Amino acid sequence: MNYNWQQSNWPQFDFDVSSVEAELLQFSDLAGQVSGVVKALPDGLQTEAIIDLMIAEAIKTSEIEGEFLSRTDVTSSIRNGLGLNTPLELVKDNASSGAAQLMLAVRDSWDARLTQERLFEWHRTLLTGTRSTIQVGAWRTSEEPMQVISGQYGRIKVHFEAPPTVSLPRETKQFFDWFNQSREQIRHAPVRAAVAHLYFESLHPFDDGNGRIGRAIAEKALSQGLGRPALISLSRTIDVDRKAYYAALEHAQQSLEITPWICYFTRVVLDAQKEADAQINFILQKTKFFDRYQAALSDRQRSVILRMLEAGTAGFEGGMNARKYCALTKVSKATATRDLHALAQAGAFVPCGRGRSVRYELNL
Image (cartoon, rainbow, N blue to C red; front, top):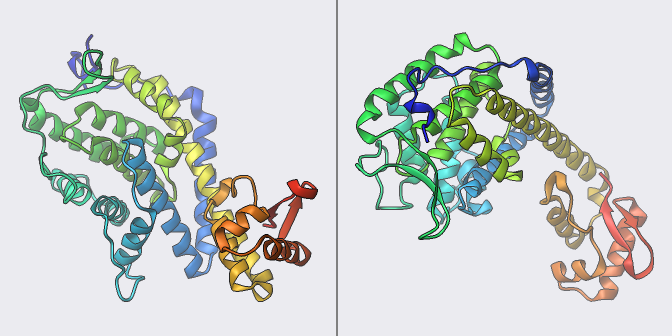
């Protein structure tokens, strides 16, 4: 099989955006709308919205690679980095800290040129302290082929093989030149992000972390196209259907005609922007909810509501019932039933079903 980088006109990607013009226009409109809503929020809610999106991206970009982070440590690390924790909160997990700090670094440097030094710093930030057997903050050096594989020993499938190590100095310089020049040449931010991500993943220049760095590069391209830090979590949307992501990427790495990849990635970006819009509206709903009901809530009821809100825009699975309430608060079933009935009477909860099957949803 010949890969894209083995073709004579590499890296001259060819694509047609006519089939996603409507999505590109919708993304532009929605991105402006989301930015306007966030700017209109009080400072505290602005910060909460931005932090929530960074937390989601840090956690999901790692989950795509099969690494599961501590949400608490990711949150603490981001808040520490933004100067919001006094004193600083302890972060125990190196991987969570690295992913969080990468989010901050990408956001802080969205408008800067992309350089080798910056990518090496991102790589050190992401991986320092997590593994000692790989090159950190440097291109891969092994003479063995860099392959993307799946399956068990004896039944391994090679999905992609990257350019040889010896060619990386030339290939990466060409990539940086393309990225920094294409800012003026590709007017649609999602399209440039799609090409940048595919191009970088096709080089696969690091021993580890290529997917996470590549998605950070896509976010940087989006931000530059918008002229402000993107309010989005690409990885949260990609993670919903990882198989589709890997299948689209594998197909795109076999050709320089990448229209299907552009279409796939543009729709991912649009869906991610829609999800960000829903997340910001959810933050507004939470604020209004507590403004309305705060005075009527006991500490026990407040703790249960906060636990339900942690589920985010998807909602608390199955709603709240007496059994779950007992498990969360360690009270008797009679007390749980009274608390739930009181919340419904106050209007904070909406009952669904009847009798023993009754459950409650938050009235957002």
